[in-house]
Image (cartoon, rainbow, N blue to C red; front, side, top):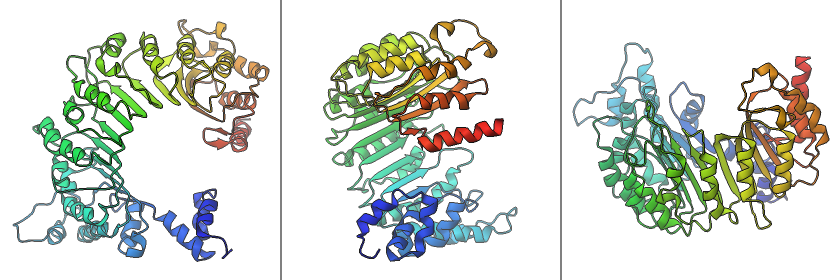
Length: 500
């Protein structure tokens, strides 16, 4: 075993389940090093009642362990009630230790442990992914997070030069403190920003322009992926984060998620500008429009939405597209299909699981990619129902499809016996027909390798039989819901035995 190179061992251990791998630390020095790297690869600092946080308290103080950490989730909720600082002369540690609560007998020890945890951030010299979070009010306390900011600032000095992925789910007020104008992250490739404020009186647009836009522009030469989102409870004007950015020559992925009220009230000019500027390099695009909480007005009509300039930008090299446009129940597919035609020769991934499509609507989508030059390998749809006839059409029109993800209302044996326009009680849905019909449909020539079944609305208590029949008709599929064929069928055998 000593003659096996380290890189070969790394390849071997990728096929060992994690819980089993962690037991192999005593085999030899090589496996001990691999196991320790896996054990401490990802860690979290949250609160002292959290198991992973307690492990950090024990391990991160040792540089030999801290250097193994590659991902840190920092969501500090460590100090209880807000701390009142008394004078400028006291150090942060002393101030934290003064934060004693009458309700907590061990509050002094808690504060001391919290300081120890946050100080250990400076030992994470090989950190490549940092997730900062303080967004779930009242669980996350912004005053607690402010106490952690000095430690975050010291952390930039330790891992700033190697950090590649940064996620900011913190208030804009915190961004102002955590992202000074002098901060440079020379290796930053993947940036995700969730835009919101801690206080209703904060001018969000002003901070976006003065803090976030300059921060992104300082890293314009290295960023490859940019995600911008806002909560669905507020209508922030985030157009400047798109419209005032410099050209990002390496940017290949854009992911946006914000509420769409109307084309007049939601400023989309910035997004149009960004798509146009990055059109030649863009490979992955996710556009997700949500519905503003409490809003009673209807969203813009689908065809009016797709007539917007941002959907007129040519994206000749796009390979992956996800459209999630909530609030539309009619005419959406007939407006989406013309937009998809420009990608018929380039897309390898298409995700349209926001709208429950009928089979006829799904066929219109599939027809776009029914030609010899199609490169589509992954398709994700939400259907009214699943039937053998739908799989017949899909296997013929998309024979090279490798990954399929489906959510649907129910299983049906024959399309003509079921219509979503009719009023059905559950007991009248012909689900049993699916189980009896599927053995007559075997897709041995289909190149499909991976199938994922999402939510199924109603299955009359025979989900095990339905999905087993489906698996038996797809002999070429290697994984079902992430499980191997053997494990997947064994799971349903176990369920069926328990039911019987």
